[in-house]
Length: 352
Image (cartoon, rainbow, N blue to C red; front, side, top):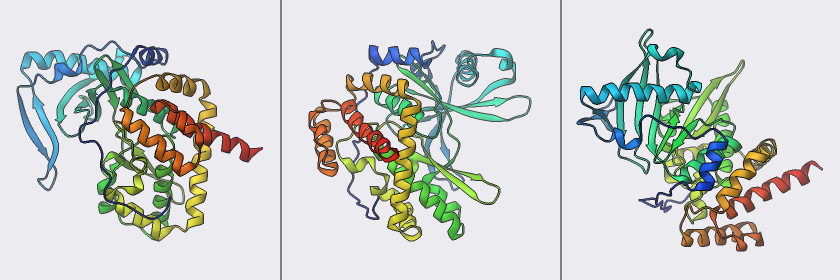
């Protein structure tokens, strides 16, 4: 990761949605991601009224609270609780009577146009969220790759046109630095994490990680504070053609993070953290070998991008890495396999 940034990265305003094919469906069934849902995405679109959700400063959040008829809400309440329980506890209904749907919000911003469901425990007012979205094969690949190759487990379920995901706890990256001011030692740890996050996105070709598409998690340790950056948007998994769309450092929305890296870290430290992240990705590939190669096999035969984007990306990667094997790639799955195989090969050579 260098300390430069560009301001002209263009993400497709309307990303094409790709259906889930038979091979990917078989994979999802095998790994218990498929679920016969009592409610689908289109059922939630039949709301009667909506009210914009504003933040504490009165600014539009791009979310709207939606309302249904009493009859609709009775059916939705029962179905949504079943879906939440299946997502969280594999369908154990012992706590069914404790839960109620507190609110349903709809967001028109972004590709998946999600519904945010707030679930409340009626006995203690504790609440949680989950999301219902339009399914998209490229997003599902992104979620699975995050589950396999990142430090975090990802919980989601799929059926036909509907995808449900659990809530990712954390402070949105675009407001984290505004609301949190720390000493230099804390900034160094956060800068280190951004370098590792930047490298992880690049290695597994996860695009469009602007600051509002990831969250920062702060964890107190016994003598310090640790940070983790987690993506919350996987729509741009192996879709765009330009290489820099897979490097968070090149988005103007992340400029403050890049400045922090430049201020806190020297070139040797940046390189060290990049090597650390590559080693961690390689170790996860080895630990999840069967699942990883099963997913890559399906992804190689799937269509999750456009031909011109595939041609551009493999050309830019070949130019950047000097790896001739990119020239033979025919799909985004092929490109990702070449990239990650190179990471694994280098790791194995280094430990011999």
